[in-house]
Amino acid sequence: MSQDGAFVVCPTCGKQLPRAAKFCGYDGTDLALARTGGDVRKICNVCGRFFPGYANFCAFDRSSLEVLKGQPVKITTTPEALPASARSVSPTAAELGGDTLDVSKYSQPAELTAGPGDFDDDEEADGPYSALIGKTIDGKYLIQNVLGEGGMAVVYKANHVQMERTVVIKVMQGWLLSNKNSIERFERECKLTAKLNHPNIVSVYDVGSIGGKEPYLVMEYIKGEALADKIHSQGALPYATTGNIIVQMCRGLQEAHSMGIIHRDLKPDNVLLQHKSDRPDWVKIVDFGISNLVHGSKRLTKTGRMVGTPEYIAPEQLKDRPIDIRTDLYAIGIMMFEMLTGKVPFEGESAESILMKHLLEDAPPISSVRPDILEVGNPFEPIISKLLKKEPDDRYQTATELRLDVEQALNTVLLKKN
Image (cartoon, rainbow, N blue to C red; front, side, top):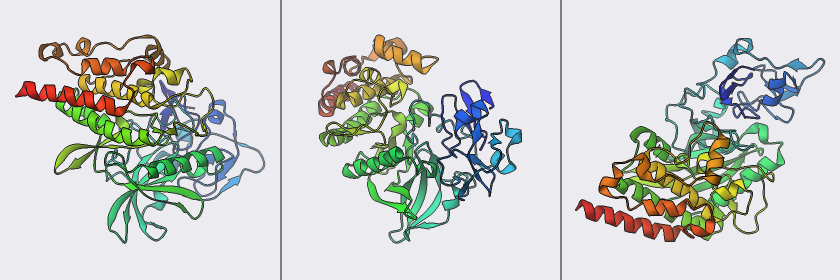
């Protein structure tokens, strides 16, 4: 298998994937078999691509897969050995700006990390999953184009024909349909997200299944940009912008937390900033895919498996201790630091080194990254320091408590300006 630093190339579709990935999030190829030159068990007779034994159909052309007969076929290991169709199907992950590269990086099965507004409307439609484009689901949703791809689902932009409304449809990956645990996770996301009704949380309109087999979730379409993109393009954000975004996030989280729902993977990629004519940077929190209930939930991830993103993960998640709403507040602390400085407080050459810093090191003061802050004062410094305490009992205890302090700090900033 072709390897380049932290990435590997899927021998089926030619996409770049994280080195630690177990399966290709684009076509379901078993990368463990590919690494060892192992045998594959199913093949698409239309395009010639190979799939693991539990795959149900080809993600590229939706053809049924057949069990290989006779001598097992070895997985090819170089792009040159791929079928021509596999070498030219769609832009690579690098060409998409890297947004899809963390699909399987830290948890498996991975969650979709790209929000409904993270990709351009004119994304090429000749790649994987393009078979649905131009078709109508359940007689009402006309699929227009692919917005994003992840380990758990594919996200499409669609039009509700009768209502003439643009929507986002999240369809479960076909090759996961035989995985009972994955289906349960997807159905749980649908139920949890549908319970949430708040202006700062993406709304769910409908659920269904394609042909009675492929579950899908219909959500509102957010025209805007991810907070991650805003930070990447602008660097450190002004106090007022940071405060306004955090206040809205707190309002949305308070709604979720009041219903016993923890997000567990808050990060700038999962916060969309909607373009509204009357107010810029209207926050929409997305991807409650790995969220769970505070009480009475069935754990759907294996014991000891980390769920989340290293840069934003709370210490208690690494210790496999019970988590609660204060885990989300820790992530907000990381995001506040990043918004005001343009970088996260804990960095490292590997996920392991970052995780150790979360466990053992105190976050540096913002002034160590931005000395200019000392000249104007920083009312957010004590807030961030409290959010990033290692012990949950030492942090803010609710999103409302945090919001009140952020609003006060924001008022201080505005008064100084005047």
